Length: 191
Ligand SMILES: CCCCCCCC/C=C\CCCCCCCC(=O)SCCNC(=O)CCNC(=O)[C@H](O)C(C)(C)COP(=O)(O)OP(=O)(O)OC[C@H]1O[C@@H](n2cnc3c(N)ncnc32)[C@H](O)[C@@H]1OP(=O)(O)O
Image (tube, rainbow, N blue to C red):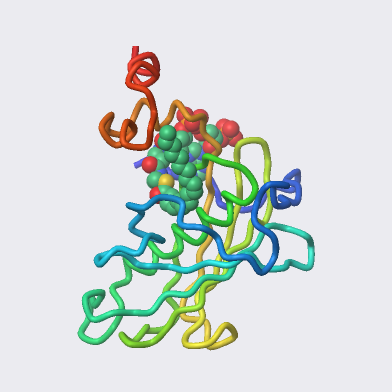
């Protein structure tokens, strides 16, 4: 096994502010794709709702809300751990998208700090701690039942800025075409 490089914020990293075209503090972050497991209003999705929040250091930050449903159990009556990681992926991916896009998750680490009962609500926070070139270092926290409720999970992650070619080459052509990408552009990216 090859060890992954560290998620520690490098000393040379700079503050990552919101892009000028990103939603303002207090605004709801729009669903970024109608088929997204994390944010779209799908029967099987996480259905996370997110808002842009203020940050003392001027960094990009968001707050998100997720209601824990019957079909999301792992142990009886408790949230499946992988779904907390999926929720963090969405929250941290969404906060990174306020700075630059498109980006993808390269590494994501979750600490499970307390059980999360079904029927409760998670309030998650995400922040871009710094940027160094293509690398965006982010962290998150999940609180139970109130924005300042007990911390039940924390996460750190590294996202990498990619070019549109990443999707043109790797997504299914029919999904790209449904978004209006011309078939010729998809073929050219794959040639
Ligand atoms: C027309 C359609 C357009 C659609 C647009 C959509 C917009 C969406 C907007 C908003 C979304 C918000 C919500 C999203 C939420 C969900 C996010 C997800 O689920 S993302 C899916 C899961 N992630 C992947 O599938 C990545 C798979 N991996 C890869 O493709 C590659 O490995 C990639 C791009 C991550 C890196 O590959 P390389 O070739 O570009 O870069 P290298 O050279 O390997 O690494 C660059 C640097 O990063 C470090 N690095 C790479 N991987 C690392 C890792 N795992 N851990 C630590 N460091 C790592 C390396 O050590 C290197 O560092 P040194 O520059 O040498 O210092």
